[in-house]
Image (cartoon, rainbow, N blue to C red; front, side, top):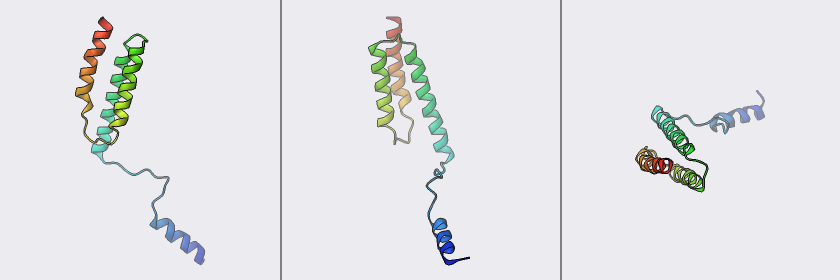
Length: 94
């Protein structure tokens, strides 16, 4: 092997590829799936509200909360969503 090729080969082995995503553990994968399921449940509940400024505000609020808690590793949003769901149910009935 020529020297330049040997140098290139040694550099590519020592540095991780920028194309490969880092692997995640099973716990992280399961947690991510739960968060995605929670988001879908929120969107479905919001879609039950007729198109209104309230619906838009609730969706923006939910989106901002998800963004704000992006780095949280514990699934705590379920309790907050239950509170929000009660409000949504009142909007549909009322």
